[in-house]
Image 1: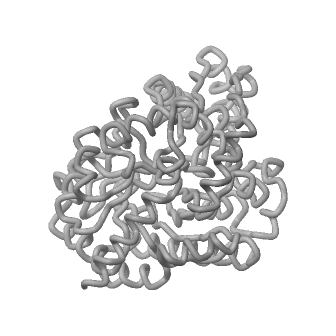
Image 2: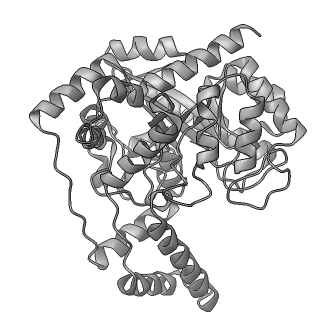
Length: 408
């Protein structure tokens, strides 16, 4: 979740004249193939931050966000609405019930329950479109009825407040996965983007993994350190997921999955769901983002209490330092790499829509998944392998997690 800068980044892109070449749309034959695949297998996206975007930007007031209309016209615009979900052939969505890493303890717990409630209200407002799913069979049933299965994924284990009882309550509330931590190291697990304290998982962190296995909640390893990834894979008897991560061999961001971890996935049965955020896709964009953050910090220190001066300074900086371009081909590169190293049974899609301030050309919203599938078709992907990428792999992982839970 890095959405807070969305309006400013969009302004910078416009003022600096940033432009992208749009990829060719699916041909008629490709569109027919995509329709056949996604009628049989639900397209499951591992991570969409729409609930937090509505809470943060619109005060959680659903009367201000008409999802049946065009949300690109809102201020700020959204990546998600119902017409575009339909155009994108989305069959199931893990809605992220995120809270900022700055919230701790009971405050984080309460905020996540609030996000679950908001997501349920979104579903209830559009009962002809969405339905809550609590299992793999639910996802398949809801998809066959022509609706979009809706699941909850907690982004940040701080929400359990060090209490396995709260973890069980979240599972009873319908949560199907939990990202162990977000951008900060917490009391029992190291983050990929913070100083490590535990060498991966603490002993209590290992207990959390075992309890998640027992109650049938998928362990999500996006955002955790490599050591924590390896610890979780050692401890977990059920498949893990990375709900929105990419390949570190292509882009070195610590949020991404290194090849050493990818090679462990076949034995575990886990799935890496590829993230669309350019900072995690491109070393050049990651470097640009780091330099922009440094410039923003410098401007804030020079202009305390003057956000207009900071904004003007960032516009001038961006004019002199345009953001490197990214497109669908780069996302396809990450998917191909994970397929090559881990195997086609271990890759999926986790866009991070409505949680990031900018996206690759051709993947600007939830309507664009067919363009990604067409790009992969042009690389020789078969219908069977595209079905695995779309949702088949995640359904398999979830079913195996359910079987582990059923054994107690």
